[in-house]
Image (cartoon, rainbow, N blue to C red; front, side, top):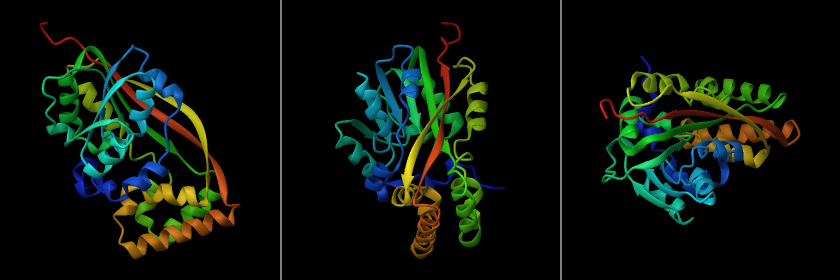
Length: 261
């Protein structure tokens, strides 16, 4: 039986070695997502798995007081350089010191959290009526690049093709997230909202983005370099750039009053 993704700590904690590249190469999020996260008037936010602060920066710009929780000190240092406050800890074990928040946000990170323990921890640190907002960017390169890239993965690293290369859609584990929320007594039924947008990549930009994926980072250096060179050559062969339709998926739920309160 395949190991649950959050249990693969080598992958979960692989990003710190490339923290600066991650910050440059990973996409941001659409304004409509931020609107949705803040639609309830949240001001105090905890950003779980904040990484280099990509989402936290957007929330701070809207006037929120954001505290990041990040497992990797190297990622946290990049976020702190942006003026963000970050505490380094595994979220499930993080000492919140009695603090409570209006919103728990987590971008591209909740699949690294134990769903049951993470949901319980979220309930413990949110005010009644506060919201949990978990979100992921998904997208596929368009044809003919997608077909060419798929062939490259099939030839060089076939085990990467299905799950994280083309497309990203297996990483977000929406089903596991919804199941954990549904089994918990602390949250109202979760809602799933999708936001469509697009982003243009040139060869260097796409190679940088895929090189920050955890499964790519886990490859031996020589195999990773061989794959990235082939990807670059494949994009150059179809014009050197493409505009990719992206979808940001938000899973959100409201914190209920405690039973008997």
